[in-house]
Image (cartoon, rainbow, N blue to C red):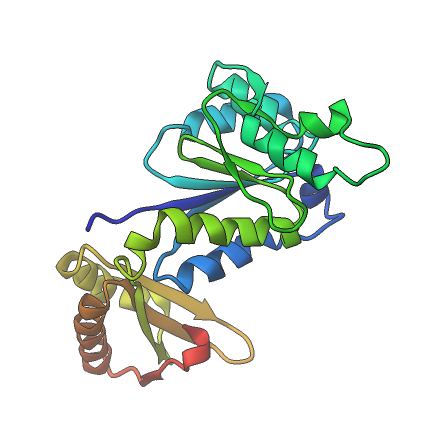
Length: 256
């Protein structure tokens, strides 16, 4: 089965200003890893309509599955819905399924279903809703992008629903293996030739080195990718390091 790539766009001035710390990326990485998948890239964007529109248009319709977090509300600083429409050269319309969910959510509310509340169900023409189990205000899918709220208690169940509903066939198909050793008494420049040789032999893998200086100096040297190929690559790395007379030990599981 062909590999599939997942990505994230995280929107909000509060993230870039440091007022709030992003938790979406780590949660998405965790959700993907538990299903044998991984994150290919992540972008952080401020509440800048031009920048959001440009970023969405660049990835819209591409092969990646993109999760976009934030900015789909109805306040003046929520630009994502309109930017998605602009990126697709279309308009926002009240989605009938979203309207149904919003009306059901506020049926017993004294304020009723206001135009501002219904506006949260206006999505680019051609969208599909993403159900929100927290408060029934849906997100939406447009092409390859899944637009979710910025609130974790809403976004994360919706994210899991998308993965389990649309991408279960890929679970374990891209299972990622990783292994590493701890190399001591060596500098990175001394192991470059070995890394290049192993990378050439196993082009489907990522051969990596992560130097550490505290609390002790060492290099974490490893391989990441197809589990069977990782095993063979690690054998080659271990043999090469041994031939260079550098001491090494297996990396602790917590480092992987």
